[in-house]
Structures are given as C-alpha cells and as structure tokens.
Amino acid sequence: MIMSLTSFNGAIELGLIYALMALGVYITYRILDFPDLTVDGSFTTGAGISVIMIGQGYPALIATLAGMAGGMIAGACTGLLHTKGKINGLLAGILMMIALYSINLRIMDKPNLPVKVQEGLFGSIVRSEVFSLGGVSWLYATVLVVVILLVWQLLVAFFNTDMGLSLRATGDNKRMIRSFGGNTDRTTIIGVSLSNGLVALSGALIAQDAGFADISMGIGMIVIGLASVIIGEAIFGSRSILVTTLAVIVGAVVYRVVIAAALNAEFLKLETSDLKLITAAIVIVALVVPTVSRSVKQKRQARRRTAELAGVVPGKGGL
Image 1 (cartoon, helix red, strand yellow):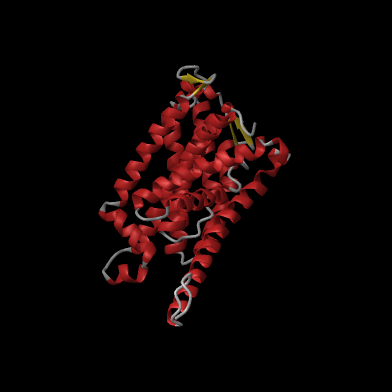
Image 2 (tube, rainbow, N blue to C red; image 1 turned 60 degrees about the horizontal axis):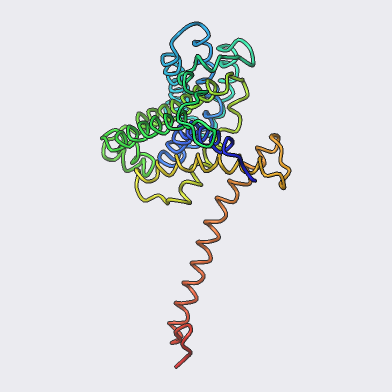
C-alpha cells in the first residue's frame, strides 16, 4: 500500500493550507513577473507573530490576521526597495529575506516556539472525530476547503476590479501602463504586499496546525510555491484568472499528495530528509515534460507541413 487514508487526509489538509502560499507566489511569479524571494522570510513572519500572540492570550483570529499583516508589511518593504530604491527585484527580495531572519528571531525571541494546537484558529476541529470516514475525520479538511474557496473567490473578485486589472496589466507591460498614466510603482507594491500577506497567512495556519513556529520553517517555500503553480498549470492550463488560480490551489494539493505518496512508498526507501530532493524532482519534471511535449508537437507539425509542401499527404503515399 503506497499511502494510508490517514496520510492522504493529512496531505489534503496540508495542501489546502499551502495553497494560500502558492496563490501568493502566483501573484508575484505569474501576474507581476517579479522574482520575489521574500516568501521564505514572510512565511516564518506570519507563523512567528501568530504563535507569539496566541501565547500572550490574544484570540487566534486576531493573531492570524496580525501574522498576515506582518507578511504584507514585509512585502511592501520589498516593493518599496524595488520601486523607490531602484534595487533589482531579485536582490530586493534576497535583502528582505535576510533581514527577516533577524526580525523573526526578534519576534519569536528563540528559534523554536511551541503553541497548543487546541488554541489555534481551527483548534477545536483539528483533532475532532466528527464526520469520520474510514476511521479518519474529514471535518478539518472540509472546513479548510470552504475557507480556501472563499479566499479564492475574494482573490478572483479583486483581480476583476480596476486595481486588480491594473496589477495584471503591470505584469504584462509596464511601459504601456505608464503611457496611459498608470502608477506601476503603486501596483507593484500592492501586488508584492498582497502576495506576502497570503504567504504569511499560510505560515500562521501551518504553525498552528503543527503546534510550533520554527525560524527555519520558511526555507524552500518559494520552490514549493513554484511547484504548485507549475503543476496546476500543467493540469488545467492558464486560460483565465479564474481557472489559473483554481489550478494553483489544486496544484498545491497534488504536490502534497505526491510528496506523501513518495515518502510512504516503501519500495522507494525515501526518508523525511529527502523532501527537498523530491521537491526538486517534481519541479524539474513539471517544467521539462510540457517543454518536451510542446517540442514534439511542433516537430510533428513541421514534418506535416513539409510533407504537404512536397505534395505528399502522410499515410496516403505520394502522387
């Protein structure tokens, strides 16, 4: 058996939470065409702020929203460094990621900070036995589906507003937007801020689900986010903002299920320490397969055109 029902359930739950982070990466990577590495730091920022505030007695909802706000501030700083400071986007993200390591340590006061799962935003249902199927409770996963779909709809609605359309257009052609009098600096800052807010929200929920926040938990998040985006687009394509954002969510879930299946497959003999290797392999396959498929299709079409020009229809012989 490759994966138990319990492992599958856990992969679905984690995938849904990581989908928020993947949506954030999608905003910068696909919409803004901005190589933002702040993600690795803002993920931990959201986790650290939420856990420390819950520990101080604040309601989990307030703590979670505060974590999201912390990520948005970090993203805004990256956007300001790029737009106003005229620093290369990649370098601005790296600088902010490095700065956030120290900032997160200040926030948490120590590298690892525990929190009771029951005190989290969904603490009362995480370990619930209600709505069981096959000996596994699906209540938490169901609630997460509702929450993620709500966030998805809000995000799609935002991208169809004037500001959202300006943000999408900024990623397509900044020069054209400026020629129409648009403020591309503002839309870039808003986009990067929103992106890191979603990433931090994901970090806050992951920390509450796991029962701790760790200073290094954000390392590699950008790769996981990209993997989710690429997998989702490979499955659904990128026809519209509605379909593509849904594809990113599905991609995040598929990614976690594949990871869980690989780790649980005894014949592969993989360990938890191999997680980064599996992630890299998934991203490579997701990137290479569509490219190879497209190349094969183009060569087939080229051969068909050549045959037609030569007066030969493939499969029917010559004249």
